[in-house]
Amino acid sequence: MKSYFTNYNKTPKLLTIALSFVLFSVASNASAKDNQKSAETIMMCTFPQEILKEKTLTAMSITYMNEEVEEKDASKSLDKALKSLKKEKFSKKLHKKVVRLASSWVKTEKKINKGIKQKSVSVLYRDVYAVDKSCLDVANLMVNKKYSIVKSQIATLNLYIHQLNTLYIIKAWDAISDKEYKSTIKKIIANYEKINSSLAKNKKISKAMRANLEKMDKVFTTFKFMTTSTSGRYMPILAEKKASDIDMLTKTILEGK
Image (cartoon, rainbow, N blue to C red; front, side, top):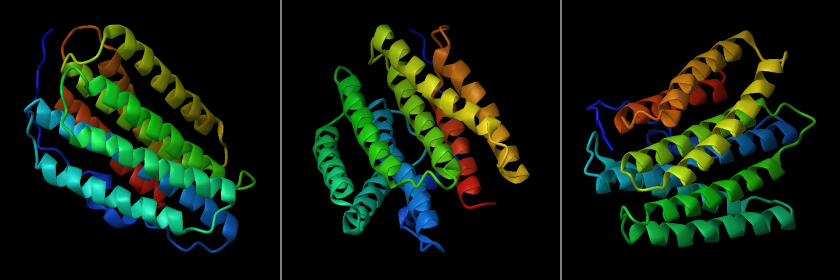
């Protein structure tokens, strides 16, 4: 397998530099607040992927910024966000799921902190993927579907990109079987395209948001090509740049710019 590790001065990532983003803002009404919390919780869901990815790159001896600092920032932000969630006045059902999510992440993080090894990183990815699923479950239970869920959908697209990015980097390390890689990539891309198709048909989306979604779509097209390529050439830092680009576009959309 040939790997081409491109040097790139990575742009600042949304989730590691904007630590306050996951703190829940006060909305003008309950339904808007619930849906805003849902979108912000999904953004929180990307932290586990961020942490695993940073530690994997370090284990691969790929240096582009101070990954250790970024990983610590992501870990602190996730802990803070989970503590905030546990203090929210949710239904008993939702509260139990939040507690279960927090517990699941503690166990997974302990495994990650024991060290990233080439032969076992794919197992850690499965654990993080399971945390993502639980996190999305929590976020979806917050949603009031009588109101717009567009921001939650866009945040979910961002999460899928993080999943693709981490998995691509693991594949670049030749640390996952072709069968598992192709199967998981196919599933994530299908999930992304299903939501993206729904957004494309939504006539209530503003022109500004539509323009940013089109930008996201162009970046995703490049990302899809990279992750499904069979050339044997891998560029994890370029993939990281593309993931960061979508991070920033997501932030722009969620902030209503």
